[in-house]
Image (tube, rainbow, N blue to C red):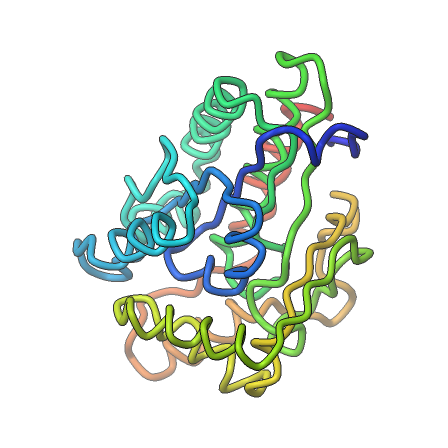
Length: 262
């Protein structure tokens, strides 16, 4: 996939996240960088509301960032249906849409969700963005660097991040501003609350970007079970879900996407 470019920092930057609210992890970086922001789903979960993605639009604009062409057009349940049905084609289409936008905007670096085995949509979006960056790089004639960030604290996933490339440490005033901005958009503020519940309030003071792991390393180890499987099993046992989304659903789509460029 895309390799670092010496000119990446001088070219426009993109942030591509799976769900509204993820951008709350990187508020200082966003304000400094002012990227084009891409979001896969509307964040509607089981419904059809667009309130979460519209909150993300307002937050991006408040930070000086630019909502881009792919911005919450799909419902969460729609994306889960693709995965359960083993449909790689919608993700390939999204990769082409992203690549078109990266080319039109002259993107040199894109930051996206880490692959953490926490949420299947996060993980497949991660691969989709990497495929799009490779496609765009071929057309632009320069590398489109891909970095990722931990969507949730590492204790919530079973895949640790790759080598750290950027670390931003926020002071007390900046942390307070991050909380204030989150509270100004209550539709997505619960995303930050969940991270604080697990990682503690000190997690707000750190924003890190990482080199993504090689695709060959994005598999569960022996005896490992993705968190989304554990969550799904508990939901099925409680009568809330009819079936469990498993690694066996995710793997063939990830392989089909990776095969586009490898």
